[in-house]
Image (cartoon, rainbow, N blue to C red; front, top):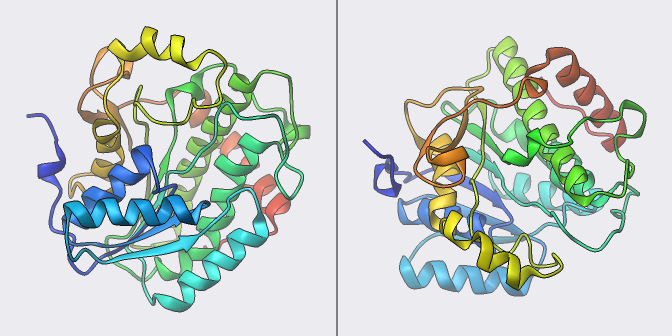
Length: 301
């Protein structure tokens, strides 16, 4: 049977934090969780877009419990401030969805001097998770779900000496590296949670070719959109992989969910296999240590 949003169990009483929840897959993830009764924190960079997202969700689900939190993953100061605000407001977090990401964007660095894709997609989320994990460790059934991409397979070798720096001129390669880092982080986090005997688990997901705004800065996007539209599915369909990893009672730590269609481009969510490189334990441990050093954030496990 095909897994759909109707398979999401009741989420009443659960607190879910979703980054990048103002549009695309993040918005659809937040919408679905709110519709099943979760209190959803929309952690977004643009508060105006965040307020529009809150209005859109409440239009579909009147009375839904939503909290808007400013978060710029490209600034560790913002990450720390947002994590402190959420930690002070909530004694427990049941679900942390690391969804936000940047792909083709004007070449620049984060506020802390990191290449924008690695700094936002991985290092920002690494610090964010580490700062919030204490609110999850005592919670039975809590999950950290990090959104990766099939791009983790493409030109994604990480230069050990230049993790946070621009490693070449290819934005696609930089994006692929950051998405590989998402998976390395997930697998190492799961290993550490298991070793600590924690009730929390870590999983990953990818949306396939989902129709979102992530390519909005790409040159010739209108032509590209016409070419790839037949291969895409909606943002609501793309969010299903994340939602299954986040809510399916049968899901377990360390799993990776993606669409079941041709080349995992579209379809319904199933367990998929990531690249051999993403499963290298030594690389996972190295990335973890380097990320702690670069962000200054240590995990309580």
